[in-house]
Length: 163
Image 1 (cartoon, rainbow, N blue to C red):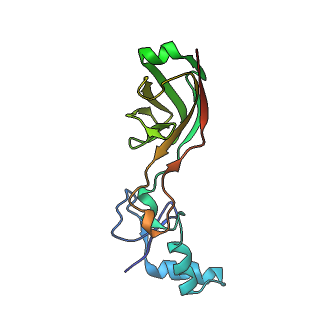
Image 2 (cartoon, rainbow, N blue to C red; image 1 turned 120 degrees about the vertical axis):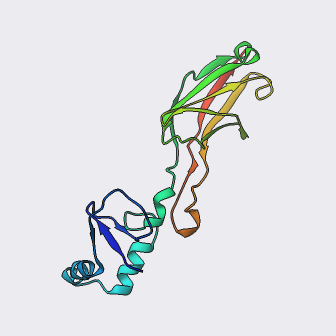
Image 3 (cartoon, rainbow, N blue to C red; image 1 turned 30 degrees about the vertical axis):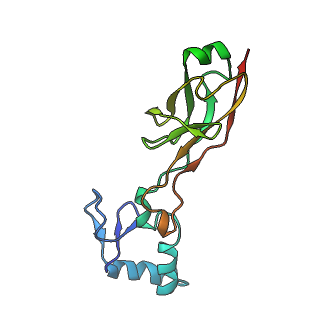
């Protein structure tokens, strides 16, 4: 297996495709390692394959954990819930696989963009006035088994439902 380095400086294995056609050979890599002086080949291999970092090429499919900042409304009436209230969750790192979770129930979610997701709140979810915990969950990508953190659950925001 030959390790290559793209001009962007990220180490990649040759079976990973990327648009940058300029690559350094293993001989150039050896010169880089030797010039650093304190690296040994086993240590270098450990560093490039450990965890999610620019050197671990297997983390390409890792998804960032979502973060939520605001809700389109922090307080709604129970009458609005009875009519089917469209709630927009604003934040970051939303992907097509992200879903909104309210009080532990995963809802059908429309991800509008990487910063917005929308759901409809009905009485099948909220049966009386009170508060509801709103989170966004993104499942891990295909790289979760090789040391890359991927996906996750956002912090919760509170939605208040009044009489």
